[in-house]
Image 1 (tube, helix red, strand yellow):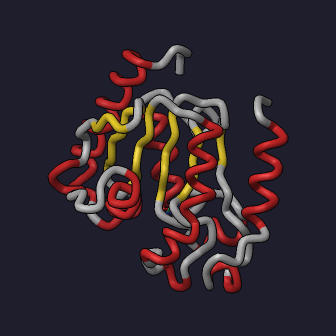
Image 2 (cartoon, helix red, strand yellow):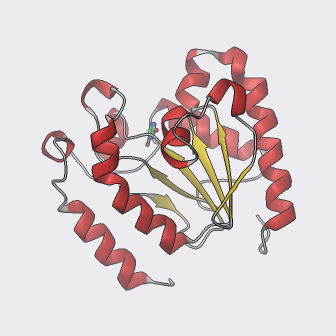
Length: 191
Ligand code: URA
């Protein structure tokens, strides 16, 4: 794998991070999963219970839905790279606090640098506000493309939100179709 040493160092350093309180209460670091050489990166919010227990992003109920969403557009978690805004589980699945996101941001920034994706998809409003713009409105701006620093960014509903409110699923499906179209247009490999 390209940059293997850099990835190993990053993961090791991240595992030792005590930049915020979450490092003390987590069971496992939830670093990232998928293909680190993909041109497509997905960014979620933070680990839930199952992720914390297994040390892998999106393996709980929201993860199962994410897998079927990816399948709808011929993707799977081995074709993309998936990471979260924060790498340690916030207690009782609360939103990661701004200070926790800031403390964790350097790790995510390094992951983005190493993957160097052409497309970043933010899953949910927390990731969209952290990555695209701080006043991002998910209901109004999901599915829209933003160009930032030579990459294409889009946000869609978080799979947990789609589990809570299935009436949003058709809109999320339109976002996925827009993603599939963008992949066809700008990615150099086939997915
Ligand atoms: N929700 C997220 O945002 N990330 C995960 O890894 C799991 C659930």
